[in-house]
Image (cartoon, rainbow, N blue to C red; front, side):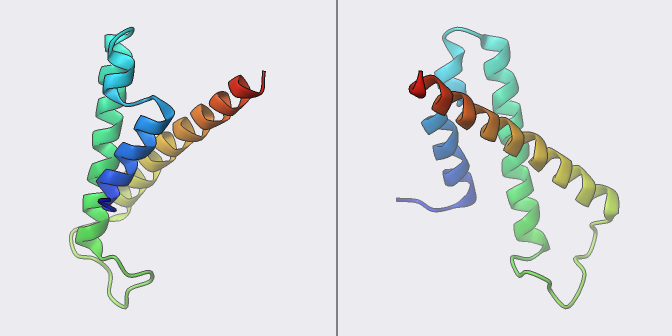
Length: 96
């Protein structure tokens, strides 16, 4: 099984039923939005790889300033919040 960042985020979306294919049958606009949000998350993974995979590297990454870091952080919060809300909704639905 592939364990890349992209593969893991794809798998999470599929398991929760919020990937483009799962939603496209009943709401094309939401499917497009989810695809774009997922693309943003994958871009954050690529940015992280470029900046360095180490936690607390000795040198700051070149070409990344505070506003890019904030953009990445806020985008990650949006995706994470959506995924956690979806997980909560799925668990609540199965309990009923």
